[in-house]
Amino acid sequence: MLQKKQLLLKILEKIKPFWELAEGMVSLLQTDFVDEPMVDSFLAVLTKAIHGIKDEKAKLALQRAVEYVHSMKEKEQVEHEKADQELDAMLSTI
Image (tube, rainbow, N blue to C red):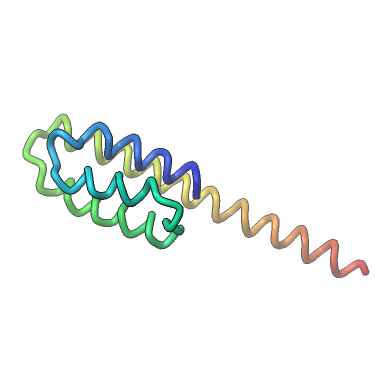
């Protein structure tokens, strides 16, 4: 989650001059109260906001950044599932 959070912060920092909501999201993401569902919610809001961007170059760059964060989320989930399976295998030998 930390890596997703850092990437999302980096994206939001870059678009703060163009999107007012980005500043508030950055402030919230920098707190200790942020959990994975909240990061996912912010990512969903950003994804919806991208559709309203008229500058195609900026829109494409943001879409790619969001897709990268999504792929990291999927990778983390696969790694987590693999670790759970390995733990189950170890515990089953006891």
